[in-house]
Image (cartoon, rainbow, N blue to C red; front, side, top):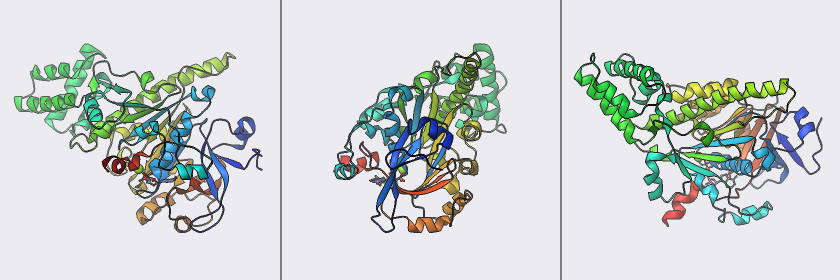
Length: 431
Ligand SMILES: Nc1ncnc2c1ncn2[C@@H]1O[C@H](COP(=O)(O)OP(=O)(O)O)[C@@H](O)[C@H]1O
Ligand SMILES: [Mg+2]
């Protein structure tokens, strides 16, 4: 059975029941269906993606296939929701490359292509937040920044400190650090900064000088990252309802020894959002039981993570992995959605593949990566992945979509962006 949406449109990610009730409200216009074969296929129905209910979306494809572009299209659509829907959703995008701030600039480059789609260049209202201590990096690169954020020192557990410094319980440094963290927490509660931990290490009676110096050295480095503070940014300010927040962590991209900083940012934000949503979920349920309208201050959350294999790796431990797996496995109940993009599904934790209900795949050529997603192979797929990729036009922006909610498979062309594509900015700025 299909629901007639007037014009030629199809909604993905939305059950028949919800479609009857809400029609196309709260959806994202992401592209059009491919109707014929060849390099310049005829395009048909508009594809709209559900944004109102929680989903796990996996975007795959080889490098340069259009993953970040597709993610940006989604961000544009979140920003264009009518106010009553927008204020019930908060969107956080983790930007490892520093490309999403260009959403603020209209896409003059692809004006002709937009015209073909009856669209026009337009800027998108997003908020770019960067780690406080890295503000000069962004100023230097002339990236328009709307604010800075820090993480609250006391929110890091011992194991997270160890992971951040690549230490284990087996090393004396690891033993000392975790002992100090627990004693500082016991004495000072939730309000302390890195210098407080440093002085606690220095005045420790049991450890030897060499171990103490090694730990102090690491803590001083962590202080220099400009990421941790006594108070830290409140989670409500990071995940503000109605706002599209870009957490730009690209300043940590090249720096050796700072790999853990991106992970700790995602881990702590993910953990706090999970806790908050669980609490609010209870509040919403109470309101529902008491006959009031189901609404609370904490909106449903969408987190978009580009280069997701960095945070959810298959073959190594990651501080973010545990948190994100929780989002993937049980996040739907408290209203947490994830959009993960990766060019290496082969390197991605298999649960994020098996748990996704919307699979958007640009072209893939590497066999191990194709094999990794082959685990999906739902009954509504009639041929092998290889065959679909062979049939996919070679130019950018085409994608195969598997939708578990409607049990449909689509070959689509993702629509052009309203706003400037950060992926090309590097060359645009240097010539
Ligand atoms: N839907 C699309 N329409 C038009 N051009 C696109 C589309 N998707 C991607 N492109 C082009 O392809 C380039 C690479 O896309 P990008 O999203 O950066 O790749 P990836 O993130 O998969 O490595 C973009 O800079 C853009 O020029
Ligand atoms: Mg990309």
